[in-house]
Image (tube, rainbow, N blue to C red; front, side, top):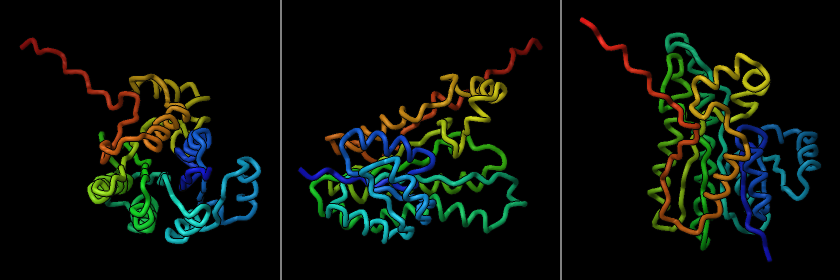
Length: 254
């Protein structure tokens, strides 16, 4: 029996590793993309660590989808796992090139992947699309305009795609993490091994810790394998209860 095929982008970063692990466990044929895979050494190293995974050197969206489809002439699940090191600073000091680079990684690239995949997904009896975005827009912070703009755009893309694909029975959902352990955003050295970093996490995250990668893996597994199609267009909060409402000011005695 032919295995269902899951294409996972940026497999080395952010939620890529738990996505690969959870869907391998679920019996998928994994096709993995990553920026690092342009280098043959990186592809070989990943292949040795993940036997059976198809590792793509392709970097252009249409080529990635074409190569993924060629594995078994099907694409059952698309996991668009999108990450970019956040660039923070006041708007007046921001470089337009930084905004463009962030938009390219977090909006333009996943848009291109979806655009290339949609005609193939529509011709199947079953398909699922899962985006890994961000929950940072729940509480924008000073200096965060560049990543905030990009993540808001990515979440809007999920909403638009869900409307377009709902008539075809293809659910499109996003997981919006914050405070997920990954070397991309919350590296171990700073937020796990460092006492000050752990104290910060305990203070701002109601769950008192970073999310474990396998926890987001469970959610990716659910969205990729669920039988129903009515859950679509959801931006699923995955932040351990964050953000926390500020305490009310002390009662006035005057």
